[in-house]
Length: 287
Picture 1 (cartoon, rainbow, N blue to C red):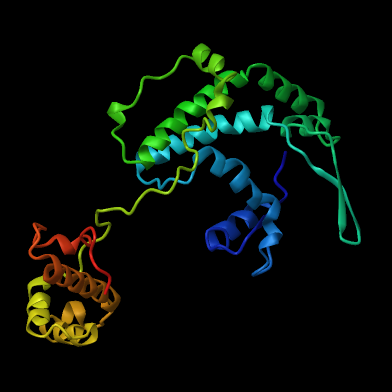
Picture 2 (cartoon, rainbow, N blue to C red):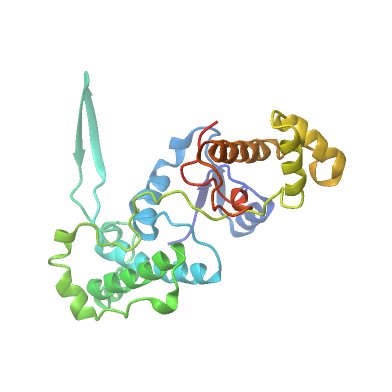
């Protein structure tokens, strides 16, 4: 099917000179949705939830390994969704007061809808039928689950070398009859929220002046974060002159005061001297 038009949202990934020039040279009409009218792309955006998120999940992915896994997943899922996943299409909608009555067409796969279109020629129809005849939905679903397992491991920081051995296709198909009893079977299904992470995700901006901050607080515990930030700006103007890290410093001082209050009440603890640089100790009092 020739591409006649391209309608995008207002993202700079689409609205740029490269895309505009390509559409001009290829004879493609380029249009865009209205600004701040998110429903203009509703038919496209809904697939992010019904297909993409259900396949990929909500884990954080980065790196070449994740890119390769996503490429494989989309190559397989494209065939499975377009040839074997029927969906409803709205036929009509009638409103009578507060009641809305919707009528739908019979569910069909995208391939069946394309074959039923009068715009398709006989050669294209025959090519689609031949391609569908060579596909096995069970094998496609098995491949999807294997790639999803890799994505789940990548998003959870697990060691790929310690992953479970691949399941045979026949065993996988036998398990589908009882998989519903165990609930969600997708490896990339959204998992319950984990507890607070106990590791840093960014470089500590006050690592170099940590000793100075402690000295200032010990000499005058009532100092405010703004006053300490002003002292840091004098000592290291290149790093703290803009005072953009004030909120981080406020959190750091709050943790230090929590630790001091805990020591006053419970005595000395065995906490690491620099433990507050990464997290607040368990049971710390809230100032």
